[in-house]
Length: 158
Image 1 (spheres, rainbow, N blue to C red):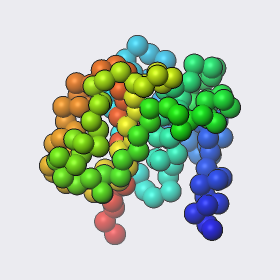
Image 2 (cartoon, rainbow, N blue to C red):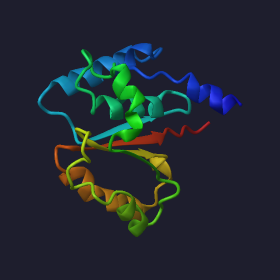
Image 3 (tube, rainbow, N blue to C red):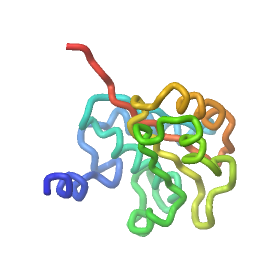
């Protein structure tokens, strides 16, 4: 029950996020420039909003109706499951071949109706060396229409 509540109450726009104004401002500044990176990485403690930011960005890369990046229109949010957005649990795809299969097609144009092909790589800190190596070329040499958003936990020693 608590998982359902946390998912249903998750912010769907940057403006509805609490405590992330500085990060949102930086993301918008980068996106408004001509040098939008192909790969983004968010690292931090559990509950800091990394997955929420990744999901908002993935839909925002598809929406042409928003005034501010990250504040996608209602139509695009409702139809987000139709966009070319793939979430990959890196803890599950630990082998090189498994990861290559999971991101296959990264070098193709996005499916019709999508502006970008977006891969959200969740739990990246659990990736094996071989699966991380499988990501090197795709994240460096992908077309401008492909984005990778990498989410990793920050481990602190106590």
